[in-house]
Image (cartoon, rainbow, N blue to C red; front, side):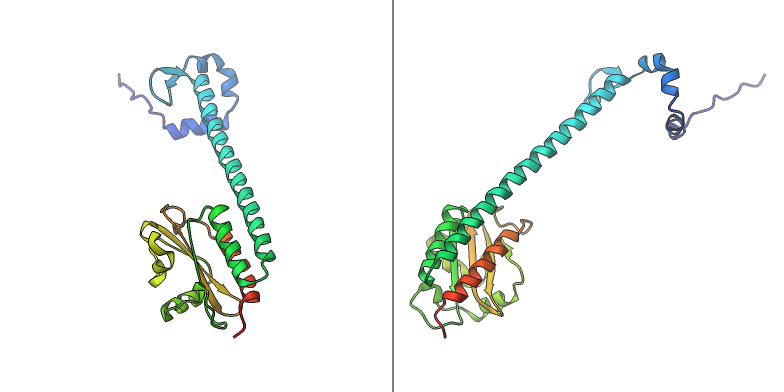
Length: 224
């Protein structure tokens, strides 16, 4: 008598059968209770029902983590918006260029925690303020090319000199051009934290800051 080879079940066919026949779980409830599967985190085997509970708990923990991250991001954004509001008010209250620069530097360092801030201006009348110091043609071309803030791990051109003696400790930089119709200045921010102005960091708030400073500085700069 010929021995028949047992038919091998395809796992995909089994899975599809169970999807097509959900009544199976009602008809064979006791059988399901007797099926044990490996624990997802290793160790002993557990009933399939317990495995489902473990899976649900894992998914819940993942969702809770994502929710905490969203709440944290929301709180950080709220804080940044509040800081931007305060610096906007300070900039609007400035009645001359020196007052504008003093408010800008103070708020960026104290409110935003940016340790090193430098700014250079050109295009207006000459001034004794250090912000009107000599600027290389390369810096002007660089500023004119910026349609959005530029983040870098290294200082651009001679801008390292703008930060003074502490420049050697800086590990990330942000540059935003000041412009109305064309560029007339460059705001440079420096941090000793390599991640503070890393290329993958968002630049929306830095751009908004640049827009504010551009309008205020253009209003208060001495005419050419």
